[in-house]
Length: 309
Image (cartoon, rainbow, N blue to C red; front, top):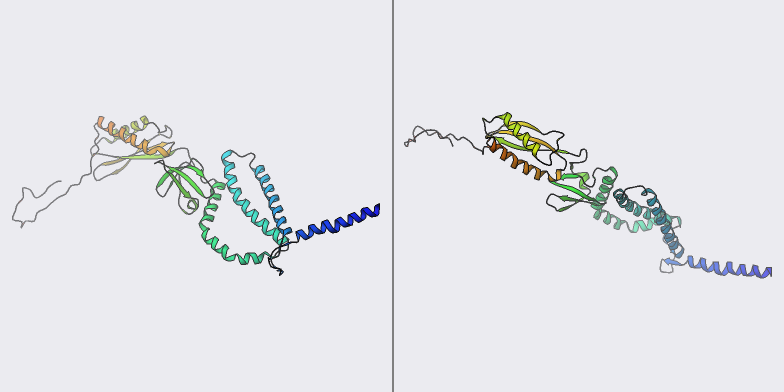
């Protein structure tokens, strides 16, 4: 009886395990019968790559769940965007290491696809710059959702930050899509990064001879009555210059929402014009004195040799 059992084990080891080994050693590449020492892919190698790929996917998912378990919703979405990029790099490295450990010389594969890699690198150069810019934005938090920014003369509110692009809502209610590499290579003004409020100003000119103290008091009164202007820090007035046609003043004030400050400035200008009319303060229009002199030899003598225009 024991001898029969040993015979069965021997048959299983020789036949079943032999069949499995033959299946795993079945050559997929090269398709011809000729052996290739540098690139010889079998069914076993393909199954090994698939198994490694599945294990890597499960491991990365567990790592992502562990790292994002205590993050807020917005931060979690940003981390997942970065993690996707890292995940693809890990997949590539794992596949290369698996093929190399299986005895395949991957230098042939890399050499054969070198031209393709160069072409893809040149074509996707700006894409990689956008992705790297997105990683910098997300990690160092130089730009946050809700920030008011100014870029290339346009002001908008950041509504979404993705790995490749950032979406900004302009004051005209239009969505501006900005590639992330621009935030690294160009100058960006962030109105709300350091403080909740920003300082704005409105300029106005008054006629020469006006009571400057009264002008200052009226401007401050307008600022105090205007909604949207914060009380602290307090508004203040600067006497900026003696202009060609007017005395130039600027009213400086602070607002908590720079996105709507053009509307606040417009309402403030209406108030200033109304208050100036009530207080007898005139806003002069541009004017210039032109003096005209006629030569003595001129036969036509004008009524006067000087005109004020």
